[in-house]
Image 1 (cartoon, each protein chain N blue to C red):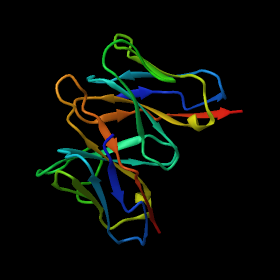
Image 2: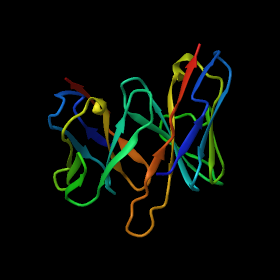
Image 3: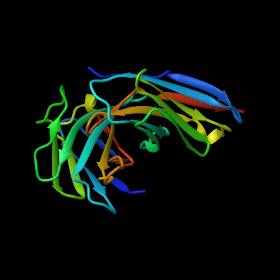
Image 4: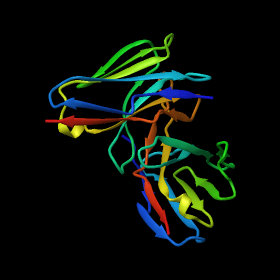
Length: 119
Length: 108
């Protein structure tokens, strides 16, 4: 299957700093990428949908000025957590969608996730 | 709003069969996915149903009834490595809406 990478896998930062997380589709082009966050023992919550070359679409309740998303190419999307606070500590997962073609579903492939800890 | 319900936790014995149920009430429907997620890792795709009926793939099978808003994931010949969370997700146009996941513990 298609491979999606995320970097870094873990990051610890001080409160007030900004953290950038990269999501790359390694062997396919993804016009659409998604960013999720997941709290311990909870489900994945969609934060935003990122389309290459256009502004991200944020879910209700997600601050777009705090979670900056850039999808500059068909293989790279970045999520920047600005002025991070301890409550932003979470597991952030990206996914990239392929186009399945006629009669196939558009499968999402998930990155390995980034664990952010804000002290 | 969208609502997807799954049991929170289940326990089953190695070698046995377990069925994980999922019910959904959503504003649209383009298919239902099942994912497996081990702790601290990303979800991995298990199955996709868009038509009513049973899809079988090795030890894993998934069933869908669109009229009832109901799906189940069936795991046969359970192995210890099957201990994980199983996420039911409904596709609404593009983004997936996930249930809270069912944490399955396989015991000897």
